[in-house]
Length: 115
Length: 114
Image (cartoon, rainbow over all chains, first blue to last red; front, top):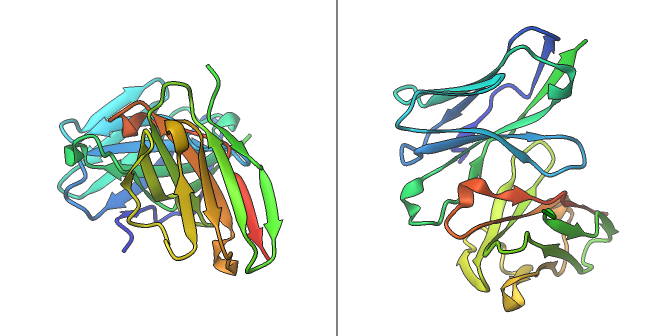
């Protein structure tokens, strides 16, 4: 049962344009969402997160949007840069776990920025 | 600040052999996680420790996988005997207590079972 889904395995975007990565979830208990970035041969690194009490969180070139009714979130990167080429994982958890914030990851989207 | 250290980086073994992975978390991080990432999939939590106690091992195949965290610092994950489907990257992560959303990951150990 895939509770967090990233339906696009790959995405190619021209440098300078906007990259939009999508993520859907099915578990209504999830109330905190994260995006991780992963380069080859490295572990995932935290990028940005959003709580379910918000519908948008912005950090520099990265913005995450959350649509709770649709159980959908998206990561916008603008403008896209060659260094953004990586695999992006969406993850979700419930903060009601009294400290046991187990992360459930999606399958990832490989983003390639074309110079 | 030193990151999460894992060794070895790569391991190739034959099926039915045993293998062990080691993880040294960030200093002061009481919570330690082991994830399995199969090619084309996202990381899946195998086991979570709080100090040297197990918080969650619901997805750990206990017939062949075992993990320990003696003294609440370093951890070892063992597979015995290995199967072909165990081929994956094994990621260790650590965080401050009750801060699982702020976990830091190591580089992982890529296991190939032939």
